[in-house]
Each structure stands twice: as C-alpha cells, then as structure tokens.
Image (cartoon, rainbow, N blue to C red; front, side):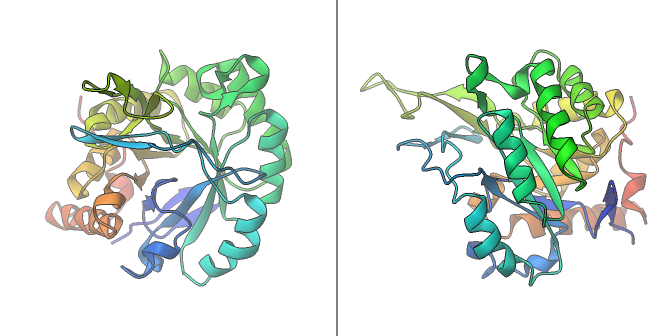
Amino acid sequence: MNLSIKIKNLTLKNPVMTASGTFGYGEENAEFFDLSLLGAIVVKGLSIKPSIGNPPPRIWETPCGMLNSIGLQNIGVEAFTKGNLPWLRQFDTKIIANFYGNDISEFVDAAIALEGLDALEMNVSCPNKQAGWIAFGTDPLMLSRVVTEVRKVTQLPLIVKLSPNVTDIAVMARAAVDAGADALSLINTLMGMAIDIETKKPRLSNIIGGLSGPAIRPVAIRMVYQVHKAVDVPLIGMGGIMNGSDAVEFLLAGASGIGVGTANFIDPKASIKVLDGIIDYMKAKNINDINDIIGGVKV
C-alpha cells in the first residue's frame, strides 16, 4: 500500500501531519507515540524574535470547537534551531517550520534562518502593520508581494497557509501559487467571538479569536474543493479533522496532505488514529495508492 505524497521534491511517507500551533515543538507529545510514524511534524509558528503572545484568557471552548487568541506566542527562530530542531531530527519524519512576520522583511529573515528544515509553511494570517493592519492573507496583492520575496531567498518547498476569512479563497490561492508557492495549507481558523452574558464581557482578552474544531470542517472541505479546482499544487487540508473518515473527506475534496489540529488537545494520539483510519478505509475499498483518492469526489 502506497501512502506517500510529494510536495515539490519532498516526499512524505504518509499524508498525516500535525497542524501548527497544536503540537508545540514535539517534545510534549513524544511520550505518547513514536513521532516517526507521522508524515511530518509542523511545529508551532516561529518569528525572528520570541513573542509572549496575548494576555489571558486566550482559549474558550465552543460547541464543537474552540476559540483561541494565543497571539502566536513562540520561542523565536534561534532558540528553535539551536535547541529544538536537533532533538526533532532523531525521528524518521520530515520537519516543517511554520513561520510568520509582522512585515515582509521579517518573513524573509525568518525564511533565511530556517533554511535547515525540510520545508517551510508561511502563516500569512498575521497583521501587516505597514498597511493599516490589513492581513497579508486577505489582500491578494500583499499576499503576492510577501510570497514573491520569500521565494527569492529559499529553495525549500514553500507552503503558504491561507486565511479562510476572505470572499473568494480561489483568488488568494492563485495569487500565492503565481508568486511561487509549491503547496497550500487550508484552512486556518475562522474569526469568532464569545461573550459572558453575566459580566457582559468578551470571553477572550483579545475580544476576537480563531475558531477551530469540527464546527469549521464543512467550510474547510468546501474551500479545499474550490482551491483544488483553481490551482495545480498539492494541498494540505485541515479544519476539524477528528478521525480517519474526516480525513478521507478532505482527500476526496482534493487535499494531498492532512493536518490534524484541535484533535491533539483532546487526544495526544489523534494524528496516529487518523492515519490508522485512512489505512482502514483504503483496505476496505481495496485502494492501494492514496493518490487514487485525492480529488475523487463525484459531482
């Protein structure tokens, strides 16, 4: 049975990887299963300088989901490459660095500093301070500019993680690919809010947070389907994947890779159970190559 997928010149042994921000830098999960079983580990988002993120409260559980406003807290690129990356290299899996910047120069500097990884995943959902806090991920011209500049400084497979908070996800996908993206991750969290009716105050200190979990899965599948029809690069589908059946939906919609996110907070072994579920589906349907599933939805 062939489970391998390719992103540019990078081969993953299977399509299942951790979604950035839900698996830390790997250490806290290694006690639960062999990380070598994963197709890839996508680490928590990194910036050039460490960031303390937003003040608490930063997480609120919602029906079938979770709101978070962590604020991209991280240890910084240097601490990761010197301290965490050597430890991660003991495992037989690919290591993908998710990274972000507050402006184009920070994106470029982070990409250069992370050159020793297997691939890079750009988080373009951060605010662009130089353009009135417009997110790179919601303006196709700004998205094109930042991807173009990062593409100039790295030969690593470049994955762009798209924001779902847009009118037409296909427009953003084409902008990223035309600027040099080798693959796309989708979707990132949807913007949401919760209010305490007793205090009449927002549940999150940042007021608005990112909604993840099963509640957003139908939106994510729809966007993967639309982007699969719009561009010809591998897609990493994510958004509320809790089991193998959920993952197969994303594969049928057009995803090549599977990102397991919120489920990791519920069950540290969730990603491996998702992989087992995909294998069980393939066995039941007599499918020998996972690439035969990708984009197989009948419409």
